[in-house]
Length: 446
Image (tube, rainbow, N blue to C red; front, side, top):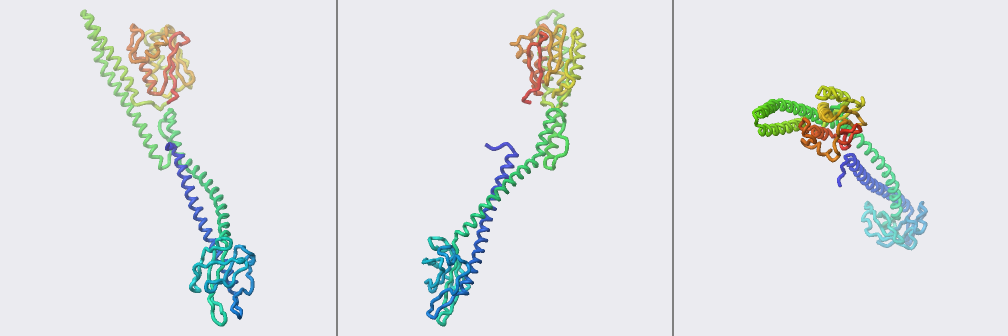
């Protein structure tokens, strides 16, 4: 499954790249070191060759031998790993004591003195030798005798040196790789920090503590921030236009609905009660639909990012409720905390409170209480209450429990729409005052 974390993907890509680069570097350095060791061994073998050639002599009988031992004592130790041998016409005529009774097989002897061969030869006890061969001339019985001189070293010494270097190199590369991976993680974290800042500031916009993505951003991130700010501005303008259109629609429909009410009264006076009832029923249906759709139109562009104080808005709505019929007979208690806030448009909060409190005004006896509990807003009254089985039904479109009470039956349904648009939750329960208790709280899914 593909990772959804950009930080993890960049870190994994960096770690894989570092591992691949260090692996390639390790292989390359090992090969370079091996070649360096081989060159050193070639130089060492050349030094042994010069010592050997300077001490070669031929007796009067034509027997070739080394007049003096070479400086390296390994030539005198049997199977020590360092050997020399002199061949004449394919037959060895002299060799180091280290070869004991073994001999070196020369596959392709040099054709001239300038032709120096480097071979991998089979040595004593099956050992693999790194050897060099030279062609020289030595006066024997008054004439120059071509000799093939071979000096070889056990290949295991080279391999051991390379293996030791490889172990040290791997340890060094592992430490270096760990440091580079840590540096890559820091680099990725620092590089992605501007995106984290954008996320944090978007959260502030969403929670209502900011209206825009403020501050400066890196050149690569700034276009994103500008586009987001432009989108927020367009959303606000579109929401404002929708509210204006809803207001215009309300004013445009008010006159036709008023005329229909007049027609109903005229029909009643003329004694045509059935026709009057039919027209009144359709007029009420139109009014309900208009009211519901106007409320939805004001919310058509989604949730707000503004966090507003609750107590001032509650106070203004309570003052308005007190001027409505029966409003002066009811005790309106504003017990909202001074620091209580909610993420919602102020106009939508006023409409939500207006519908809740108007419902409480119609059903309460003497008291309506508005309070804040944590991050929730509570509206309750001392009316007859609503049976628990009816709680869900009364928030549905146009449902009413008492047809005798004035109203379109859309109050709690509109409250439900507003709450849903702003990520709020509505809970109905029985109030300690005896009536209905409505709790509006911030949704955890917001």
